[in-house]
Length: 292
Ligand code: NAD
Image 1 (cartoon, rainbow, N blue to C red):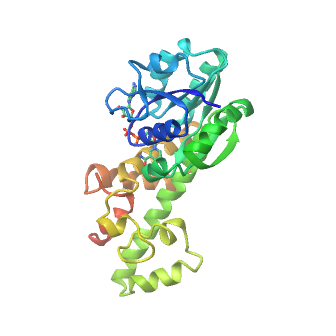
Image 2: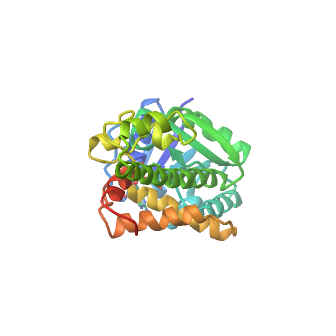
Image 3: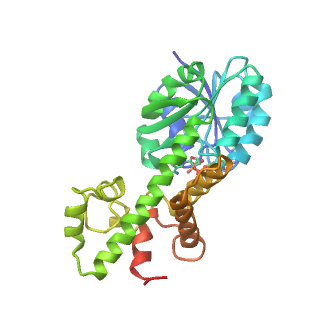
């Protein structure tokens, strides 16, 4: 049936996600401080205005501090029994705090960060990793099925964010490993295509090698074949590695590789050429350098 949806945060991801919900026949009221309201979405005057009559409010915001301030603003005006579905990537603690505040208010709540990027958002093929009660997951599922092709209910509040940052910590580490190996192979005189042919079918295979190869002209089409235009920007990888280290610290987890990956992406984005580049541009970075 048609649902009334409030959508707060209509940026690169939120805009196309809100459009897909409206195209599926739902009544979507959107609000953003800056980004333009997509054509099919009704423009609300404020976050409260978008949230007040909604069956589900979806947030797609930059970080946990902003999420918490938006939640503080909208929770009091949301309908009893409505659901707050946060699809942003934020720290686990903020996700849990917002869920708890929503449940105290008599609402359902779930954290549901995504993977799939801007193309997945536009195509409606995102993957959602969901943390929250069974009831909240059930309430969100019809909308998740429109915006994405897969969702996994990972556990209670915060479990979606936990899954997301564990995945992206592995992704950051394996991208660095793949890039440093390609750059070393160059210096050893090993042809990149041969390296790909071997590794992609041997025990060094990974998503970064097989599906998103950082070497231009090798493997399937990837941002490397488009001058390393993102794709998945190095800044976003840096953000997710920061969140994973914040989480590791909060639960006393030993994550030496994650920590090193964070330090390297930080250097790459802040002091080198990484800003505005895809995260696979680690390969040209290594190419230029010797041992440090
Ligand atoms: P974005 O910066 O394009 O969009 C965020 C939007 O939030 C902006 O338009 C901003 O104006 C708006 N906003 C900020 N504060 C607000 C407030 N108080 N009220 C209303 N609107 C407010 O970012 P994005 O790429 O759309 O990413 C959104 C979230 O999704 C982030 O948490 C990001 O980490 C995550 N994510 C992004 C990607 C990606 O490839 N872009 C992939 C997976 C996850």
